[in-house]
Image (cartoon, rainbow, N blue to C red; front, side):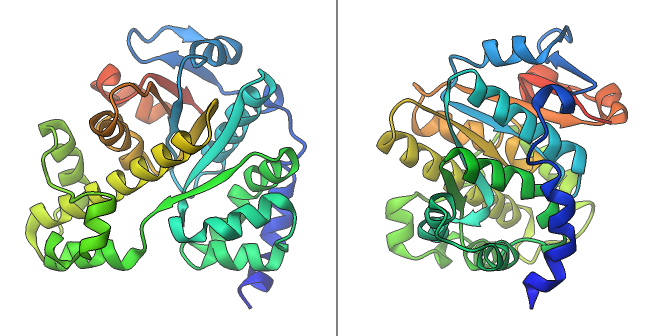
Amino acid sequence: MKFTAILMSVIFGALFLFALPEANAAKSIHRATDGSEINLSTLVEELSGASVVVMGERHNSPDDHTAQRTLIQALADSGRKVALGLEMFERSAQPLLDRWIAGTYDESSFANLFASGWNPSWYSLYHGIFYYARQEGLPMVGLNIAPGYASAVYREGTSSLPEEFREEVGTPTCDISEEYKAILSRALGGKTSPGGFTRFCQAQVLRDLTMASAGLDFLRKNEGYVLIILTGNYHAWRLGIPEQIRRIDESVTVKVVMPMSDEAFDAYGLLSREADYLWKVD
């Protein structure tokens, strides 16, 4: 069973459950606009006006997930009503996520739900986040699209999307900035896409659009929350999910926090274009 394979990693992940934010503090946090260093308390204060905080991650990085867990608890401890928007769960998983938070969905089933759409070996890295949300009753919101939709767009284009989906979410286009196109081109790494770059781009924007739409749906139905979206770096940059949120509803204030290594920090360009805050983790 998938759960058996995950069990030992869960024990490791559980160690994060009781860790306090100050114990997991970043090496340093910087405003992207000018590079100035700030502490965690200042970051929390400066995020007080945001309805959405998009926090990036390298999926397999323990440090990035510790940083996420730290910010989640710091915002909750500040008195904000916190909800988590999660790339690794599809929108259709919402009833099961609600059961997890309510305490009526067991660990084995939840671990298998995670493994059905995400790398099972990563479960321990998110475990402390999931258990903290359950412990504190923080809503967990599934944001992602079923993988088959993105794969179909990648191969066949947007005409492969069901009409009802396009009516509900919209039709993704490669109408994005040149900066984001350059980022996606680097992500391809010279590989060829079945439909060329345009369809690869449409599939990426489809995920950005779906996650933006799902997040805004939650906020419309649940006033007063700050939604912390945990997602991979290519979606988290301001040109990804935040841009799609802006296009749907310009009134929503979005801030972007990007965990990164020393090496990436030193090499980073276009800081204020891609993020609001840079969180050095290793």
